[in-house]
Image 1 (cartoon, rainbow, N blue to C red):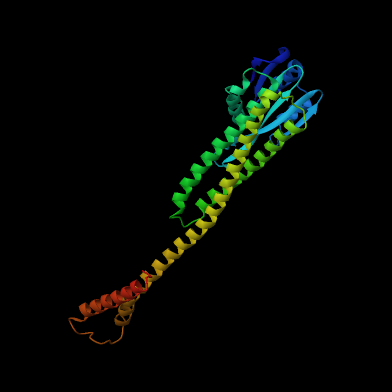
Image 2: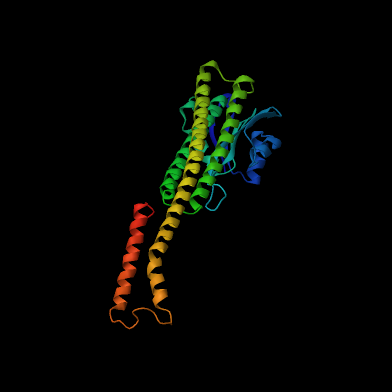
Amino acid sequence: MLEIVDEISEGRPWVVAVAPTEEESARLGSEHGVPSVLLAHALDPNERPHVTEKEGALLVVLRAPRRMPAGADVPWSSSPVSLVLGPRAVVTIARDTSGAEVIERARRSDDLIPCAPHRIVIAHVRATADAFLDAIAEIEKTIDAAEVRLAHALGNREVLELVRLMKSLVQFSSALRSLDHVVDRLTKFGGLEVPDEDRCALEDARIELRQALETCDLERETLGATMDAFASVISNNLNDVMKLLASVTVVLTPPIAVAGYWGMNVPVPWAREPWAFLALIALSLVLSFLCALELRRRRWL
């Protein structure tokens, strides 16, 4: 999908391309002057955040959080969102719908008033940081729900769920650190002309990125501590179950022993007495009660 969003300085359009087809990619090159090598970088799903310049156009690659489909190895990942600042147009390219959400956030940003190439970059950086913060908040809710189930869990399913969330946070942390380096390069080593009156907005966007990174790292540390704690909880839960089963076995041993001795096909005491059956049952119950009482005294039951 190609869409001309706005007109910026010197009559250049701002063009948005979401999951462009081969025909639309060709139009980006022929009509808007996007070099094919930069377009290939922008559509690469594994492209890391960076800044590069080719054929008079500046490529700024960001990454946005992406919710993965059910059954994927990780619930959250990230996908590239790229900006090409060329002499004929400024083009924002998203490889999938997760990038489209970031673009929509950027389009609603006050940083685009008035619209200019550096303002478009600032708006996307801020939108990316906000998207990561929202995704981390959703991960935190998932962790809270998993913790409730873990309190009574005996298996590994809940712990494995936390491991998958940990992998997502690791990917978020890597993407956010790379984004911070991108903004650092844009501000310190040139490539993007930012007037003095807009440097404060760029710094604010960078602060939001670092806030997202700090939140992600804090959530990772908390999740790691939670996984360690609940590994012990699961072990204790299993020990409690085994203790209960062992206690039940001990309590049931006297009736089984009495039944085994007096059930043998040999002469036994009181075999012909009419009260023997009830007496043996009473003896079994008394012995079981004494065993249960002793286990209770030792706090094993």
